[in-house]
Image 1 (cartoon, one colour):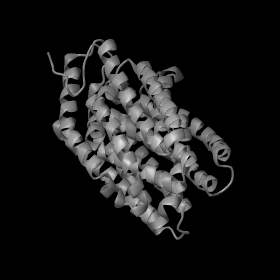
Image 2 (cartoon, one colour):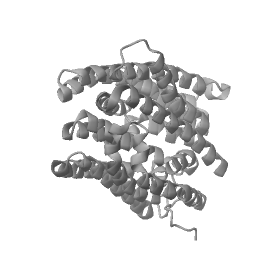
Image 3 (cartoon, one colour):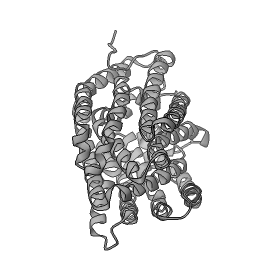
Image 4 (cartoon, one colour):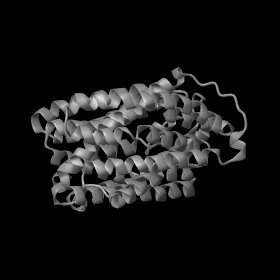
Amino acid sequence: MTALIFSVGALRVMAHGSRLAAALVFARMLGASEVGVYFVAIAVAGIVSVIARAGLDRLALSEAAHNPAASFAIYRHLGRWLFLTSVAALVISPMLARLLFGSGIALQTHLGAAAAIPFINATLLAASVLRGRGEVNVSMVVGEVSPPVLQLLIFLMLPLELNATRAVIAQLLAMAITSFLGLYLVTRRADARAAHDVDLTWRQALPMLIVGVNGQFRQSFVSIASWFAGTPAQVGAMGAAFRTEQALMLPVNATRLATAPRLASRERPLPEAVTTLAQHSARLAALVQIPLLAFGAIFAADLLSLLGDDFVDGAPWLRILLIGSLVNALTGTSHSVLLMSSERSVLAVTSTIASVALAAVGIGVALFIGTAGVAVGLATAYVVGGLLEWALIRRRLGARVDVFATSD
């Protein structure tokens, strides 16, 4: 398991490195204001995309982990639903963008981002199935490493005007390629194509839809709230701070990604083997995570200056986010344990409460201190969500999976 975590960690480094490289290129070539338009356009598309996925990617992960032999049947069954919801998203997304932005460059850029929704969802569904059946490294290549690498290469090669629209067109082409790559990898094994009966319903997907919407809401809230609370340049700086925080959370996120399929259990209380694995992986991640967060807080301005001088204003916001990330990291693999258990509805509740806290605190504080309030709201959501998941695992599953837990 340690080797798997480190291999996934290496791929995470590649994925985040590629995203940071893309962000660096976009920031340097487009400037803070133009890249702010790009961030807010993909934020709105992200909300519509996750609603269109309807939690099917998370359901695919859980079901494939419990029944790897039926992975292709699960992919095909859920893929049909995903096709219908993605088509609906193509209709809804432009209307939502027009409501938020009216006409102008933000709307035009968003339309390009919205066109990628079906390909994004197909890619993430394939990655979830691959991850569920144990091919974690392959799923990482499909879902996390390939998209930013391809987007950056295509962006540099496109013979178009240098603006945010060029970036979203590059994303569209990159996701189209990865969606077909995912399809090939899911079906390449002969045993995966064997006939299997799959009995899945929309009711099973509903908690995963709620979790997915809340997760995307947190990401999109950063750009959309900053758009209304500040200037396009501040949107760019906040987006850079958020993406840097996500990159610094690499050890915990890689650990959760690697261990999730092996934490699959519908027993209550949790089996001792699952609890022990969750505890050990949490401590392993913390050994690297805590010093990394401290490094990010100390050198926040230096990290953001890599993107350009205009982004250094986001250093205080990055430090606020890292405080929330620290609390979230100390809760260990709580999110993964709930996701892979029979307590999906509980996870939906905790994520909703965290989103409500984000909106209430973020908007309330932003009214007084501007864009910094968005960072305070997101950090609050990290703390509230992490602590609720930790408490409910103790109450509902009779286990502790945080950094400080020890096996009896």
